[in-house]
Length: 469
Image (cartoon, rainbow, N blue to C red; front, side, top):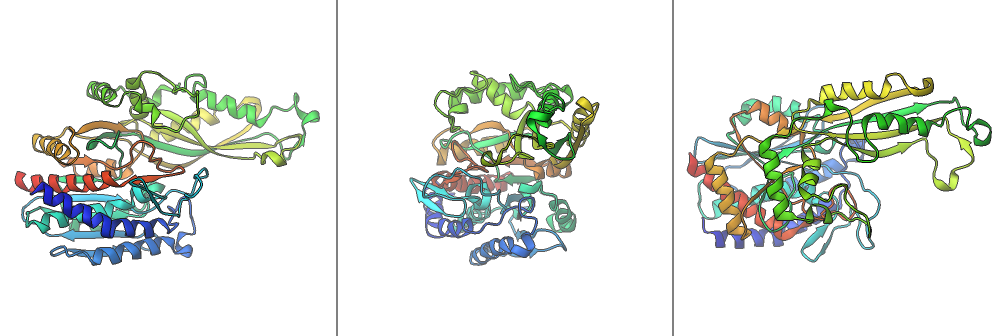
C-alpha cells in the first residue's frame, strides 16, 4: 500500500461522509436495552440501524454481502461478509447501542446534540463506538482503492454491548457456519492512552453489577423518635459495603475477587507509566486540589486493569434534598458495580458477592442483593511476530510514534467469548477513547484525527495479514 494515498483517501471519506453520518447517528437516542427496556416500542435502535444500513449500501466494496439480522425478541445485528484473496479470515467487531444521557454536559453540548469543535466530535456514542462500522468498511475500501489484496472479512455490529452483549451468543450460534474460523480478530471498541500513537489493548476487566437493598421499617418514622432506637438503613448499608471495600484505601478486602498479576502485565504497566506519566490521572476532570488514590502511575495503571474496584452508580430510597424531611427512612438501596480482573470467574464472583452482603445482616436487617449484569474479563494472547511488527509499522507510519500496549479497565464481553471460541486467533483490540473523551459520561467526544489514523492502521494491518498467508 501507498501510505500517502491511504491517508488522503481515508481523510477525504471521513470529512465528506463519515463525520456527517456520525452526526446524524449521535442525534438518535438509541440507548442500550438495559437503559431503555421499551427500545422496540420507541424505535430508536431501528432508526440507528436504518441510518447505518443506508450508508453501508452506498459503499462500493467488491462482493460485499450485507444483512440486518433480527432474531425474535432480540436487538438487531448487522452482518457483513466481504470475500477476500486468501485462505485467511478476519472478524471485525463493533457496536451501535449507547449509554444513557448522564448529567453535566457543558453549555452548548448534549448527548444527542452533535458538535464539531477543535478536531473533536461531541455527542453520545460517536467514539463508543458508532464510528466502528464506518472505520472498518473504510479500511477495506482503502485497500480496494489501491487494488491491494486482503483476506475474507466478516464484520459484526451488535446493538446490545452496553447491556452486557446478552443477545450476541444467540447470533453467533446462528451465524457459526457463515462466519467460519477467523484467524485474526479486530475489535474497535477500546481505548487509547493518548492520541499520539496506536494503542493495543492487552487485557480487559470483567464486571459484576447488582442492586443491594437494606430495609429496616415498614414505613418511615420521625427521626427524633426513632433514631437511636432503630438503626439507620444508610448506616447498615455502610457496614455492608465495608465488608467488601476498605473505605480509606478503596482496596477490595475479599481475596476471592483478586488474581495474581502476571509479570508481563506488571512490566507492561511500568513501561506505559513511563510513556504517560501523570497523564494516567490528569486526564480525568478532577476538581482543583483533588488527588489520585496513589501518586505512582504504575500502581494506578495496575489498579484500573488488574485489580478489582468498587463503584456505587445509583441509589434509591433517598429523597431529593429539597424533599428530605426529618424522617428515619425505611430503606436504602444502591447499585454496586464491581470491576473484576481478568481470570476472575464472573459467575463465582456474583455468588460470592451475594454471600458477602446477605450473610448475617446487622440488627437482623432485611438485606437483599439482586444480581444484574455480569461479564468476564479477558487477557490477550501474545502477538505473533507478523502482527507485532505490523502494528509497530502502522503506528510509526500514520501516527509517527511506536505502538503502545495497555490493559483497559472496562469490559467487552464479546472478547472473552471469542477467545474461548477461537483459541488460535490473533487479536488487535484498539479504539479512540483517549484522554478526556469521557465515554459514558458528559461531554463524550471522538478525536477525529485519531479516528482517521486508526482507520489507516487497520487497513495497513489487514494488508499485512494477507501477506502472512
